[in-house]
Structures are given as C-alpha cells and as structure tokens.
Length: 346
Image (cartoon, rainbow, N blue to C red; front, side, top):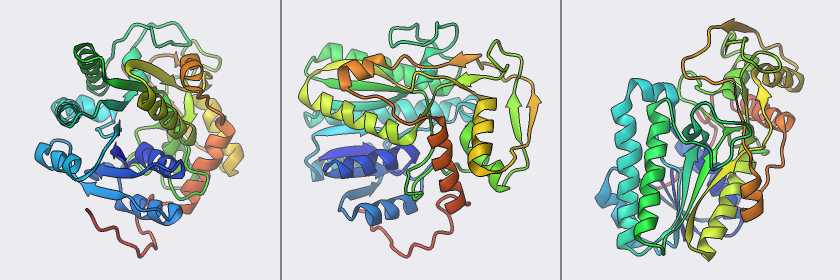
C-alpha cells in the first residue's frame, strides 16, 4: 500500500491516478489547503477503484501516526507542501513550518514503523542561479526564495537520514515546470486566486477570465529576449513518480533526478503555441523583470532515463492542447461541478 501525501493537489491527483492505473493500493492524505475534494470525487469515478482518504495535515503528528497504525504502508510518495515562490517571500515562516516540520513528522513516523522507502517532491528551484545549461543533478545547489530553500533544507535532511541508516531508499525528484492536464479533461491545474505560473495564466486570458498577461522582461540573452524554461507535461511527470517508486521498492540508496524534457521554451513561444491551439489571441504587456528570475533554466534529464527508464514524451503543443481542454471544460477549476458524489473521509 502506497501513501501519497498531498494526493488531491495538481501533481498529487495525476500521480494518484497513474498509481491506481498501475494497480497500486493507495492511501491519500491531504489537508485541502491547495486542493479540492472534487478532484478526489473524479478520481474515484474515473478509476472505479477504492482507496482510502484522510483529511489530515502533516503538522498533526498524532493524526498522521494513526494513519500508519491503520494501514500496511510499504512506501510514501511525499507531495504535500506549500508551493508558491511569491507567497513564500511574503510568508517565510509559514513555508518553513509547513514544508520542513511536516516532512520531519512524516520521516519520524516512517522510521518508527520501519518504512524506509520514500519518493520526495523537490524542485528545480534548488539549482538557483549561474549554473551551466542544461543543468545536471551535480550542479551547484542554491536558491533565492523561502520556497526553494525549504526544498533544499529537506533534501539535506534526507541526505543526513540516509547517512545515518543505509537501509533507506529515497528518490528526490527535482521538477522543472509542470503544465498541462490529464487528456480526459477531468483533472488539471486549479489555482486559488491569481495563478502563480505561466500556463494557467495564459489559459485564463484565453478564456476571458483575465484581460492580459504580463511578460516579465524581454531583454534576456535568449532567442527572443523572454525567459526560457523547461515545461513538462503533468502526465509525463506522474509517470516519473511511478518509475521512481518502482526503483526505491527494489533497492536502497539516495538519488536525485531531474524530471524535465531537456528542452527550453520561451514565454513568447508558449503564448504563440497556445494561440494556435485555442484559436484565441493572448494579449500581453512587457513589464520589468522580476527579482531573482534567470534567463533560462532547462534540465539534463539523462540520469532519469539511464537509471529509471523514464523519459518525457509530450511536447509543448500537447501541453497546450490538454491545458486548453481542461480550461474549457472547467472554467472555474473544480468549483461548481455537477458531480453529486461525495467522498466520506476515513
């Protein structure tokens, strides 16, 4: 049985869906701060499979421990955490408390129950600035914001944990820029309030929720002057978790893996592709660069291919097609759904 923390969120629901399709038994834990119960309703409906769900915050150590007492868990996919770079700058203490203490609680309970297999959701933000592109897992680690720093601290904690006990098997997955949605149009990114990421903002402009997009800087040393990032389809990302999980269940060790396509797309290329897909014009205005933004960041994903047998398969066009399908089908995200089902919390 696999425990998925943050299993109702954007990455979590796609990963949970893939795990169920692969035949794993699941226990999902979520505090529903950045997620919706409707995503769980849809997961149950589309998979027609049973799974356990707990409405629990990882900061509630006693409630978390009860989950381990009630279920025979063999591994954990740890996706729970606050995730907005901008918000982390405004509320650093909340980010450190939630992300780091929640992970400490989880690891302490895993240790208590003898469960030593963990897939951890990290981020490419741990690479910071001034690294050669494409960036490899051996690049210098640094960060410019509390969100990224919380991920970097957790990576260090996990490193120390493995050094103390070599029976642990830990995969650290450094995501680049997850975008898109499930091809069914039933699952996608549903940000609370103003989107923090490019793709959902573009799609909201396309459907008329927002008037225009702000492009932060057009004078970078890139092919069109706008920032270049490695965007990865959410379904490819979910499959990366399956490969990592399979690996840690068969061996011990600690390894970090880049999950990206190895290709960089500029902001203007994303806008142009989305316009082609949607048939809509995306109005945008060039504004000043944001502090801490770098010209380009894209992955060298070869380690994940060599050691996990994983490779991203979908390109920017497919990312935009699926993001637009999700946006059209769900203009308000998971809100105002016609679903009449209701999940009863365990």
